[in-house]
Length: 134
Image (cartoon, one colour):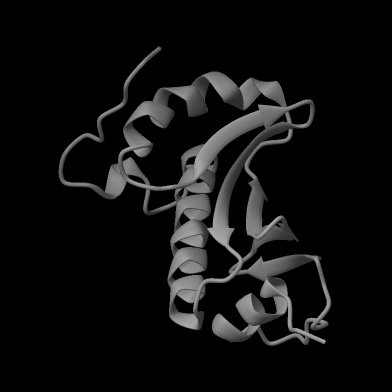
């Protein structure tokens, strides 16, 4: 049996838990952030729930236009609230999987910091962070 991309991703990032080689879905817990991964049609889709209600959407929308230039993660919303998602090539090599996953986790942490007013937000910058209002 061929090892699926989810298991190869877990190996690439040095995930401490064992992920079944045939897993088509898995939820990673990284630095307190929950990342759902699902493999289908040669792609691995990563998702991270950012907000569980619509109240945060106007605030998040203000950052979306500027962030689209910095990261490949896409801000979206559904009935449950806002989430980030990104797709990876399921056939990517170990280094690419690791780099892309780490970049996605960093993006998730950035968005979560905006909602939680954690250190590392715009208040830690020596200049005001640009925010584009819709």
